[in-house]
Length: 210
Image (cartoon, rainbow, N blue to C red):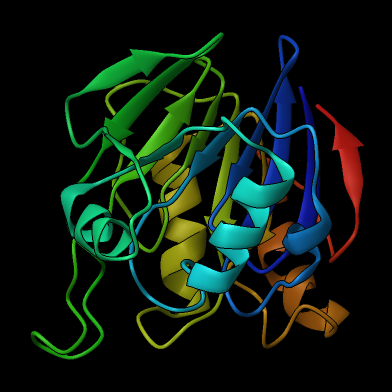
């Protein structure tokens, strides 16, 4: 599996010849030039995960690439005349690789403020991307995309979440506002090393073979 981080939560994941792009949001614009994408995953409707103009550009550059998302995002896409396939908690689909949906709620920011539907995706029985939530999947992933910054979380919660999920390796996402501050990434790197979890501080534009 190869993962390239375009920025924030926008990734290109290549596994078994399938290229999957996640969460084309407003904090990452290089997705607009991405090509040879076979599948687009969108976890929820917040603008840092769903930028409609980027979605339209992606579909223009990658005709036929299906979008997999939940009902909430689906309503927005349908309003723009964009087709999608619904995969939510407990559902799965095979598109050259198995995609499974886990979780149904965005982590709390404050009470019900911005509490939208959020679906995390388990890809190829190997990689888990939770979106904006700390949902613990029912099986252990080898690789975890670990949210590390945002109005709904603190770094302690990120570290504790990784320890609970117990991946072999994780890397930071949801770090669009702090990705350039390397000491920030050093905190989970040091704390998770003690738990036997390798933390790789991937920055915007980085690509790594897992």
